[in-house]
Image 1: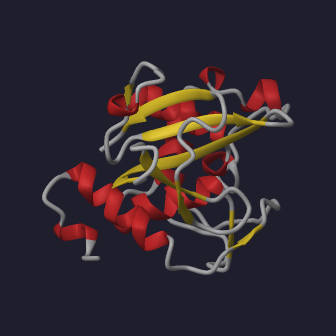
Image 2: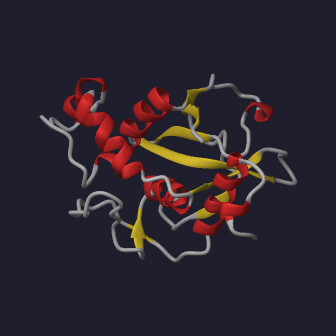
Length: 181
């Protein structure tokens, strides 16, 4: 593995930053924590699926906490925070750690890609969101590693066991597919 800053393309930089996340021991914990703004983070030893994405982009000098908060401040009504969580204004401590908010952000500032059942349509560095059982949103990063048996691109995500590389692209209903470099 090499430093993502030296990757050949922005997509590979995202992938390399995602791979780096799998080297960290992280306990799954989505508790509300006051996070310094901007460029704040929960303690390094805890996190959820969104923290994998936020930390990977942070390795590339992109602060999603700040970018999501700034966009929500200007366009709060476009985000689901008021409808889902009953908020009346953005909260920089948690907004970037919520999958539905990231979906809106990536749709507005990245590229929203059609959801398909074809592995070839999911490129390294893409972001995918799913709905897990119990109506739980989830997010992960598509890599350039392919499962030997299925041929599908593997995903870096945290579904409760810390950041890991899995063949799980089609295990749950996909709710979004994005590119953000």
